Length: 395
Image 1 (spheres, rainbow, N blue to C red):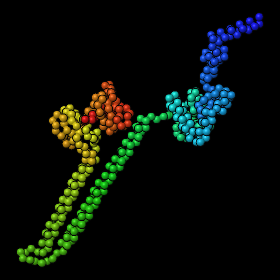
Image 2: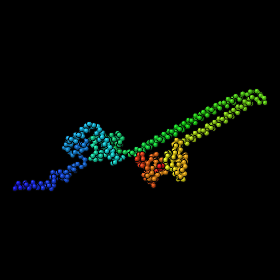
Image 3: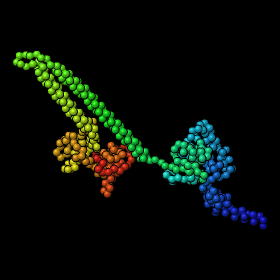
Image 4: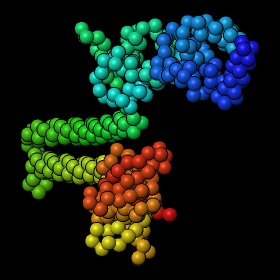
């Protein structure tokens, strides 16, 4: 009877294995043990059981010990020992980059506690752990951010607070353009001041030279007057005395000297006025017609034309009109206006913008505000400008 029972149990176990496979051993994917293991792997595990070199998280101390004695881990340790500084530097740069990216997305321009930001960063299972970087504590990392001016840090009784204020490439480009524009304006002011100083010095020098000549003429006239006062009682033929002849000659010389002096002063004043007018004309700058191959039109007749010549030194520009096929020299900018192209046309910003001189393509036109969206050829960025400040490029 016992033998028959044992044989029956053995046959039942074999049938169970055929029907359910190896579920009794817990190796099946849907077995309770397999499900429990996957549940344990979800979420964060203990940091002391994580291997940064192999990027492997172990569940317990026994698993971590077995991993440390594995062949793959020993190979990674050997590679790390050859150049440990490079590994630490690489992990530090990756940790800093990932942390700042998380701050830029989640807490942009926001004051937040450092521990809260760090807890949000380590919520990602695949994050670079701080024990693999050159920073041993969170406080040391926060101080590094403040020292390198990457974030604004503040120490309070409640702990460290950080504020991340990133600057986009467009903002950096705008600041650089504003700085360059300010430098150009300062240089232009200095150049204008030097030109005025030279003109004033030149006029003063000429005026001083004229005053010296005038003083010499007055001195000569006084000498002649003093010499004429001496009366000589010599009678000549015709009954005219020598003193009367000397007095007559003296008056003629004084009158001629005074006339010459006033004529020189008048010519000098006319010359000075002419030089001042030339200087003022030279100091007048072109407002927007500062390059060739741009399309413009007359404000009165709406006749279009192309700028064919620009002389920035003499502040002159020539325009070739399309209908009459004639070239107008030394045009007045106030009589013309730039022509804005349509969508897809090539254009250039000519005035009243931070990106003056920037060439690009028109992506869209806002009929309500009159602004156009431009994509820069050189920088690859998009910006907006007023349609009256944009001119179409001639093909």
